[in-house]
Length: 250
Image (cartoon, rainbow, N blue to C red; front, side):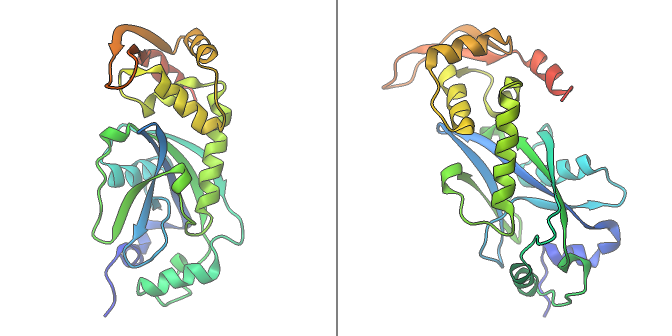
């Protein structure tokens, strides 16, 4: 009996989708002083992968990425940035992809979903605590710290690395992109931790504070952050109006 799953749902409604193209989303969240990535796994397959989706024929590409994200996170207001198109002729691995199709109950190798895909990559920056992970009937979702990411399906490890590389470049000129990762108020050490994780190096605390405040995107509040076992420290906040204006221009 043919399995009912997300792949067969697409096959059965294939006239509604653009063939040979998908959106792959790298979702970053920050929690417990670590940058995390949201990964997905079909219940019938052992490898984790990025949240992916197909583009409907009457749908804008950005709208498709938003739909894919809302389905997995429950969020409507997500900062999504299209960062690269992945069109290597050897993606995905033919043997691996065939195994997924077989386990999904799809054995027709001539169907478009079994063939080569060009993928449009998006990265998303979200507030970890606001994400409502929606495990679906045939799909599991889970956060992974950057240093815990396993070997993923197809070229998805490379897609994550490309997303991080893009953010590293943007971070040097657009510090406001981090504000989607943090709550309204935060100690500056948390923002510095995000920078250090993305850039892959330690930053001087005093120089970081001086430089980040000079941008005007971060402001110091007249409030103190207190946590047992830690020295009290000032709280900070993003100038959200200025950040939103800057992000709308990117």
